[in-house]
Image (cartoon, rainbow, N blue to C red; front, side):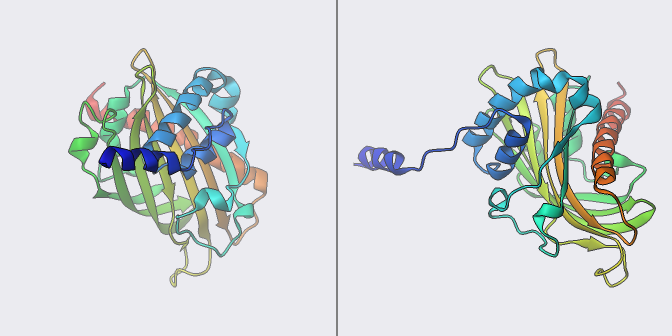
Length: 269
């Protein structure tokens, strides 16, 4: 009887949308479907193809790609600020190669003090795991299970010489391709805007922030990273849109460089 019910349940389950093949489509797809391990694996399979081809070009590694703002349906189930419309977000994506293994990247992901992400910008970046465990996330079979962690991050960041505190929720999930290459996919957002003024309402503010970060294990035990980020800020001074995109790209490149430096220092490599 149970087998019959299970078959009926599967027959009634809605079909999954196929994963896109382009970078922008995949970034949105992975964000929207992060909670579904099967969809994440499907998206990562297509993303692996992109990372091994277009993702190795100078455009991806140095200049970055401008991304359209996320659509509301991509953010279904996510609580985020609504003072500014999503259309005002600047979006960009960058791919970078790291000589270090995905296991070393996982090891620094679970650290409580995350200021190394951009040591010159973060006054505070305190991470607390709210679901999952660092031991399970770092286990040899973490990608087989697959394991995941939820993190809550208390941040104070300097932007253009101005201190802005905010809260960031960032969750990480292991996955792997059919060929056995492991990957970690992260999804982040701010549940409320953060501002520089004493009352937390005015001044210079981070209004919206969403990102997909991934770490892909190459056959030679190195790691290819891709970050897609969408942000909206309100500042006392005007900041041209193109400048906002450039800031995103440069910031993501800095994080990747600082990550490698931190891994090197931490593990004496």
